[in-house]
Image 1 (cartoon, rainbow, N blue to C red):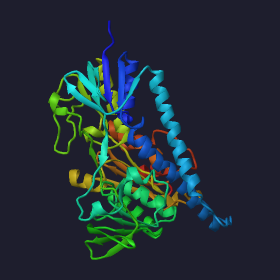
Image 2: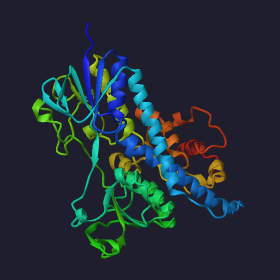
Image 3: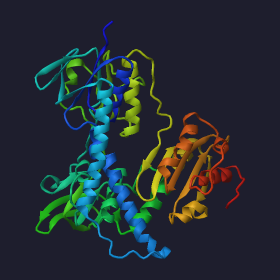
Image 4: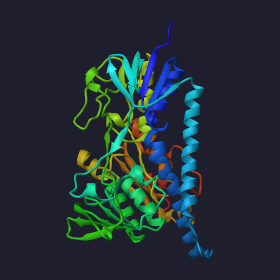
Length: 454
């Protein structure tokens, strides 16, 4: 029996994971990639950003040691070595993914893949037939239509994070996750940073109390944040770039980071040849099996436009591959956790307080401040809190946190939210002491009217 030929366009989180899973299930798998293996996340997004964030977080810790009695003088940062360290992490992981693909017998074809006929994809004039097609071409940074933007030094997060320079003055347009993470990184590396956000607070998709707490911390660090504000126009001047804001303020900077979201990348795929259904933002429409409206054609990752996250892309890629190889798998979006890798970290899963009150009316909101948590105090990172949202009948609706290791701790709640479990289930384990995660237990005890450490 011949192995089904599976062609995957794109080797980002959705594409390479789909390739490995399809190969495990007996597929004859070919991956087409026009850039670097691993896609945006590995090469120009998640990984290089977090590599820089780790360095800048350590740098802030060193500076904080003064009040602990450790006098560290003349801190010198070699930007050259910082960027070499960032790149070495990326290259090591790229090599790792390439090794995994080869180990699983996946063929890699370099170039831009285009659909030329039903069952045929072309790369640089060479044609490849497929039985199953998985489209995993990712996304591109959105660019706002601001007058003058084409004539100034405006870059996306994909571009800024891999540059080997630190701008003297950086304007960040967009206060979402990408904008805020890079704003703090470059502020710590020495940039004067301004953030423009059109909504009432940064991180508009995060619980407002959490977002406002982080906004206060970043402002105290010296990042100038303008909310309810937009950029009216840009102008190139002798000093650099003039940005005219809707509030009447004029800023002069030498680089602009545009971080206003991403859009699905379906350009030049020739989807019309197959009749693949596409939404108004260019996203490929799929069902919960990652099937498109065309038989044997699947899509996964940012290109489907549901969540622009590497870990949802992983699961979508696996789901697409399993269905392409004859299994019956579905994707579960019931509890997608969110993490912002600032310092302190932000993490969230389920309904925010505002969403829960709007949807259900009367809900239980309990909050435990990290200033009452022993481990947070020893880490000198205690401004945050854990917030639990639950229904009157005890169902866990959401958890939101700002504090150390929030991205690791949030999974405790994700498991329960995903199955509609009770808030009391968060007490069905022993929490190591002293740990920041104990704050979760304490917040639950408050919601059950059994507080201990507050």
